Image (tube, rainbow, N blue to C red; front, side, top):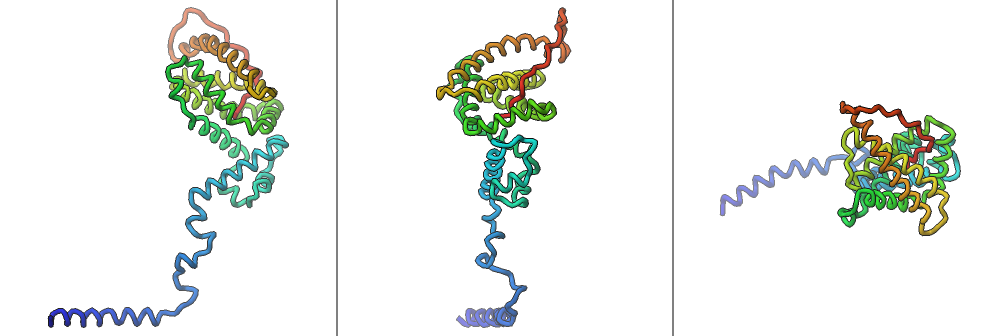
Length: 265
């Protein structure tokens, strides 16, 4: 019992200076704020992932709204910020340029298509699987037809912009091929993606004019273009073989460059 009393006395002596120091510490601006004192703009929730995503979504929605009635080359960052209800600082925190916004729109479209189920088509031919994936892409793009028309017109006027759109389109179609479980590896995969980008650009022209709720003209165009694309891809196999060191006894002339407007959507 005596041992317990001594220990208690020592603890009280040690604790006393600490208590006195805390009482003597001045309360003022240098005091560390508690979580309750932290301004809302500095709280972790204000810069958390959900807030960042919400800001990105607002910026993209503003960009697409402006793009629907103004050519891409005439859209300024201030126009997007104003339409989205964001400050320039907020917009800069999410995107670096208007082309950055366009690339994000394409990536978001890819993600929405890829999130859909594909296992139900696993036993179908490659062409049917690809048809299903591309029709899903058109469904995702349905709310943005005015913006797509604007992009197509800008690409027709500006060949450099068309080339930039083509790069986005080829990258995007690599993911569509993967969703359809079609090989995208190596040079052969790159050729397939470029060919599919041109196929989709032609289909998109029909789609933007299609007023049928069931999209019958668009589906017919997609089926027709995929059938033609199968044959064209067979011709391109020779080009792939030559480029990778294979030997063909017959030289084929290069196809004329396509006049189709690339579709980066």
